[in-house]
Image (cartoon, rainbow, N blue to C red):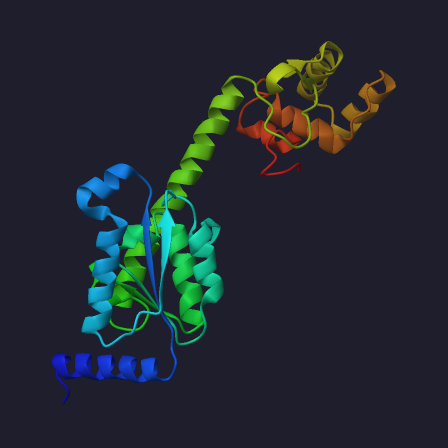
Length: 260
């Protein structure tokens, strides 16, 4: 039975064999501020860490992609050197980076890039996470953690969008889609009442309270000069008294949900 040490030796021998088969090994390092250099995150320090790791694992480093003055918040594929690295990679290649945060800051970007690298047969080694995160036991742990973080990140995005929309509704801001009946778009996206249509809304409410059907209401207000289908009447009633509330989405106030 193979021990963990035997497995590690076998794994590194396999890497060396692949190296001899013309596999390319690339490093990736990044700094975004001068302060990082002062705190031990300099490009030179990062490169020495990668070189040491490659030598210990029998890998010949072919090239180091150096990202200068680029924020980690930018997706890897949108960084100058990150994009060059991704376009250079072939099946069997190896990428080494000293720390997770040198390559990724967004969990969503991490998962996307890691999945694509794995599909292409490219190994990604993050030294601070113990090595290859796409080809050995640690990958499951890394992907699980990143998935959890990504889900939390998506939740935060949804919460921010919901909070913004709630605030905009309270301030009577137009959120896109069909402009709701009884309103027009004013300055800075504010919804402004249309007097004639507002009177029609009140008329619709009165007729409904008197027991008229939706189609009957539609016919009556049409005779009075306001054209609105029975579905439109239904939506107006749903949003009555609260044109900026959640029910107002039924008449197209929220572009994401779309008009009914």
